[in-house]
Image 1: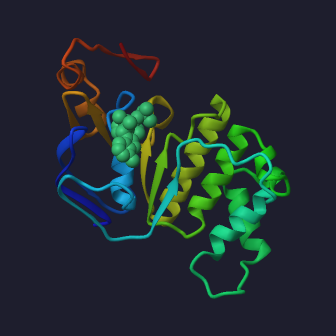
Image 2: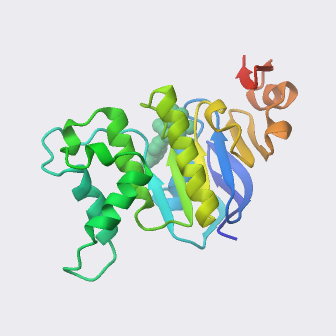
Length: 233
Ligand SMILES: Nc1ncnc2c1ncn2[C@@H]1O[C@H](COP(=O)(O)OP(=O)(O)OP(=O)(O)O)[C@@H](O)[C@H]1O
């Protein structure tokens, strides 16, 4: 098992969380603003403390943080940042090969921007560089905090497919925080839905139901399926 939460809580956000993540799983974390989705990732990374229960992390973790712009004047190219992430944890003065950097940039579809300064890239382009950085240490568990935010629909689809390919080829698990389930609907094994009146973990069919979400929100919620897409009203 890569990760487990036992009766875990970060009060007052969420509590009594039991969750076990095994190799190769693709889990979506959904819920409204401010319920503690990023906080959940923080407890796995060790940057946020649980107020009760325990979390056990038994693997290498990669992290794609929520959108933040690199400073405009940062004097580093995209390839330099990926190279630094690859060098992390290796012996001093041992620079990662250019081939490995190029491979990672190609993996996320960022070959064309490898030599551009990161601070001058668009939000979506910077997001691709963050993905390459997160994959640099060959994580067994990848935490992605709203990685589709500044991407156009084609890029969103491309990103989800690339991450899923990475998962299938390497057995990496993915915990994917998102406001919209549709871009990942065809790929996820399970959903953790966190809402003001509780959380539920299960398959899409178990969680994405009107009566279940109404209970979690404490008010009437309708889940409608239109053309294979889920709409929560
Ligand atoms: N380091 C911190 N210490 C204390 N409280 C924090 C910290 N970081 C965030 N919070 C608070 O915890 C709550 C949950 O924040 P979090 O970012 O986890 O929510 P979220 O579900 O990811 O929201 P969003 O969908 O808006 O990104 C918010 O009220 C936030 O202000």
